[in-house]
Amino acid sequence: MSSSVVASRPSPFALWLMAIRPRTLSLSAVPVAVGSAVAWSGEGRINCLAIPLALVAAMAIQICSNLYNDVADHERGADGPDRLGPLRVTAAGLLSPSQMKRGALVSSLIAALAGLSLVWMGGWPILLLGLASLLAAWAYTGGPLPIAYTPFGELCVLIFFGVGAVAGTAWLHLGHLTTAAMLSGIAIGCFGSAVLLVNNYRDAAADARVGRRTLAITVGPRLSRWLYLLLMIAPFGLLPVLDLLLRGGHAWLAFGGLPLALLMVRRFFREAPGPAFNRILGQTAQVQLTYGALLCLGLAL
Image (cartoon, rainbow, N blue to C red; front, side):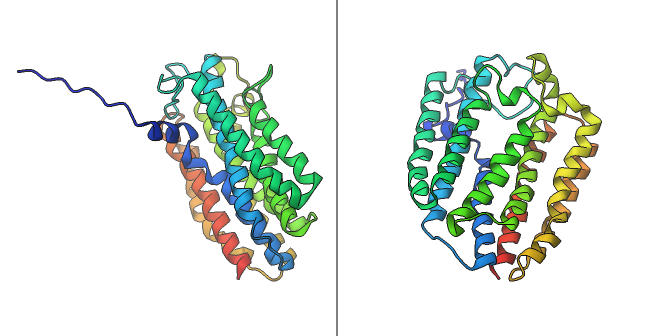
């Protein structure tokens, strides 16, 4: 008697977990932690209620962007058979475009609800930052000229997942901007930009097919590798400055993430664009997580 094995469909929970891309959600969580640590180290002030609300808002905005990116790329025909990245649930037919759009809407509503409390704490600057962040989450792959189809994606990540998120969190604790928060935001944002650069470098051939002009396509492979080096090393160059600005902390502890960063740079230079860059992408996010965790530890001491 013959038998056939039918692959079982993933559970709804597993499907949505795939869609939100949990491996890189630390990109939105780390800035909140670093902004809080900078506020504590600099002026010894902390708003305990702001931290969980900022985490919810930041992660919900990233999830919204991820879900909308998935469905928008599918509708534009960007997820073809030559795609090298992880499975996209819309293109694979696992979730419908309408389901993904509803998921993105729910995520944006969660971000807005958490953001309302943050606006009450931080005033109009937080309102402007929140609205700009939600707009950027939609505009990344939505609208007539999506940011993801231009060379400005990495800059957008640096602004919103770096400077805006870190400085905005510090503002919630302190009520004003500090140089240390801005520089910390640049450092954290560099890693986020590096993650996107890995993604765009890996997908350069497929992206060019659908008319994208990402930074990796615009500057070419050789300059992309040197740009990745700069993004991965620059945050460590800012640590001595942070130590001078935050004399009560020990920002230098974040140098513990340098060996892993150098390892990623070595792999980026040596690997040919392909599926191997999926692992480099995840590990680049881990470098940011390591740097951020060690920086928070040093500033908390």
